[in-house]
Length: 235
Image (tube, rainbow, N blue to C red; front, side, top):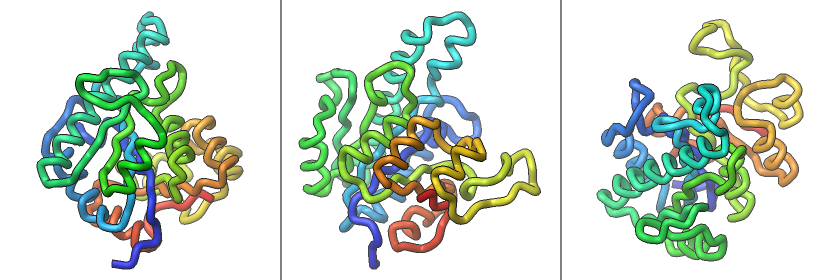
């Protein structure tokens, strides 16, 4: 297999682990993602950022009177739970994995250290970055953009449950138009909800392309690594 990318950052929402019910962790979903990662692992250095929305969202808690900072820290802890679930699924199929967190929790994961993360990837280990940026008010999308830039990833792969970026929600509007290629500035001007504006701006400033694709379609991740036109390219 000819590979277009040597180092990638894969962004997973917490819902990727939950399946149709959108809550909790479904082991078979973690296993399916792990197999897709293993399929591309040879010759590709892989970092993963995972969200926690299947367990808790800080911004949702604040709508019900919870302090936003407290809610965001709870959300960060949720991402650590998801990271451990994905690590377990990967190691069950003999993929060496390290979890690094932005919040120190030494008994179960390493603290995030950029040079150590890069060294792990150079040795063929998948590195899962948990706890977002370690700061409240920042999404895991922003954390993904930040980590991708820090580790010199060639592309940020944003996994979703739709085929790419559309003019409207394709699950609600069957007539929504799918974009094959978008510029960062078009994304911001149109107000398309792909990632938050901080994440988009960080990628734009550092010339880091984003590919938005459907992770639920088996083989899509491998096709992207091979350079095939899958999803929407934002550049």
